[in-house]
Image (cartoon, rainbow, N blue to C red; front, side, top):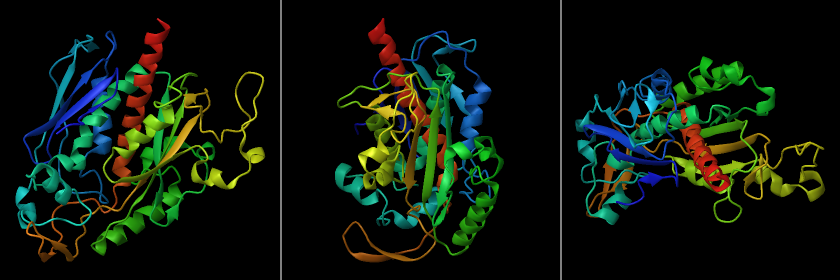
Length: 354
């Protein structure tokens, strides 16, 4: 299986399956001499871990990260950083009923067709459990990029949307409710809605928005490796993501150039920021902001018609422990992937200038 490494200079390679002994990763290219706050790394993992509230999967995993290399006395050495997160609460028997069948909208069929073998226990390598390793790497990257602030939050759950722009929100409120929506009133509505969806044995999707403040001018390459293209790739690599837009996004397509152009101030900043902090594929020093759309979780607690590995129709029962809505737990994953992209470009810029 190819495609398990992300990044050019700051690289993350992940390994492991949902119901294997452990998941983990190797970070290559991290600068030496960076003091690592281990409590911060663990706190980031705790934001993503299962079982943290009544509106997420009730799989109980401590998600304690163990570092094996690359950090000595709390400081990075410049050598590969190896880490492991042990799996502690697998219930593989919950998946015995799908051993020979394919769950609708999952990777079961495509994995079986591509590799000729599949780990049906929780989806194996295709499980979103793999993203815990990304959060570890993102927590390291954030500590290198200390002057950059990356804040993601839930802006939509199903039909419920947060209509205020991020500039009118107090993003410090994001972690003060289990939905991770910075508007307390909308968060309460979203929580009630998710709980009702769960009672129905169904799931619902949503949108995670992210704003990056303090990114320097000049990140990104202007042709194939545009900053927004790499951010899009990073976000679309996250499980269940179906869409990515930055700046004015799709709404910008309905505007005229005279309405959409960001006019300059004398200091190089712009009067508006419909460009989303990126022009010509390169950061311009303004806030970078984007939206990431997540589909409803594919496993629902209802009977569904599907096919087995003989391509015969069967009825499948929904079982196991699954999120009724994935977006609250996706917030730290979006932040982590954004941090990986920014640090990679930051190191590339530093290499070019040196």
